[in-house]
View 1: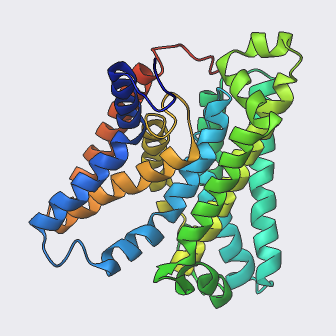
View 2: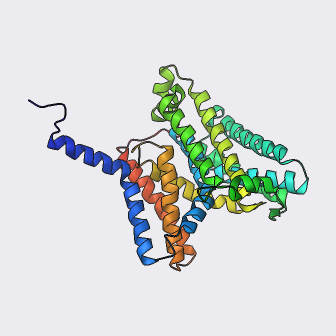
View 3: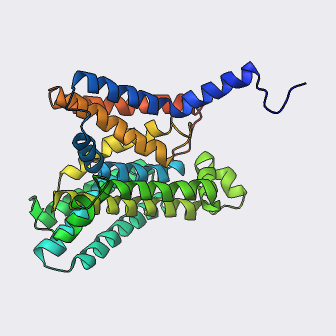
Length: 331
């Protein structure tokens, strides 16, 4: 008779397969780090290299976390990169140019993010325009607004307080920016896994009509997800401004493609088949590790774009297979 401690070969094989599926990306990441460490001895594996990477990729990680909220509910938000830029520029204009206190500038930047989310939600949920179309249009509008606010020029002189809170402040040799990412990921994980709201978001993403028949206010859930996405993007803009000590009206959009790639690649790890915060964060730094290593090896700059684009296509493909090729209602 089997004892409680006995385990069949089938059960052992299942556990190994499950572990490989959940943590395969982490294992590949470790192998990648080891490979670059061998190819670039004494350079790649330095603590300074990882400290810089953890800090500089923080805005992209925040964007990836912002994306997975509406994606879980079945909506795309292409405006996250533009919202990040708007937030950073708002702080730059109000604080560095107009001389307003940093606190006022930060609140204005966050309010701007909420406004973007509400505008997106109105047209997507109530006017019923596809989310791809609305957020693409919003991106263009915000980009023009940012260029008008800055006269297409970088704004320097942001309060050192923000820089200290993001970049200069360190714990275990790593800038605070990285720990903000971990705190946001933890909060999203707690909501997704342990609250009724998280279950509602998941149900809405799996099937809106079924969720509606089950008594869930689908519209309210989608509005909340879009506003949360824009608000987190604004926080990403504050992190970005703190890293640079300035507001760049263009480079925030460069985070969009890697953030989407990380969001989809993260859906193949930790909780395969679902957008999840820990998978997204790991994917951001997995992609950053690859680009950093290749850059140190002297690859041309255009390879970065190829790498990110190929990673996005591969991530979506693998994610679709992991999710059993189920179609998702994306509005």
